[in-house]
Length: 66
Image (cartoon, rainbow, N blue to C red; front, side, top):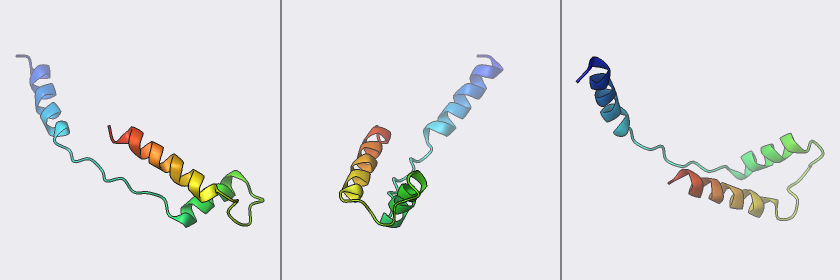
C-alpha cells in the first residue's frame, strides 16, 4: 500500500466518525429578519408568511438529513 493510500485510509476513518450537526431551526425573529432583507417595506409578517417559512425550513431539514 502506498503512503497516499495509507493517508487516505487514515483520514477517511477520521472523517467518517465525525458527528452530524444537530438541525437548528429559525426563530420567528430570524424569519422576520429574512423578510426585511428581502422586502424593506415589510412592517409586519404578511398573512401566511410564518407558515411558508416553516414549510421551507422543514423541506431543507428533510433534504439535509439524508
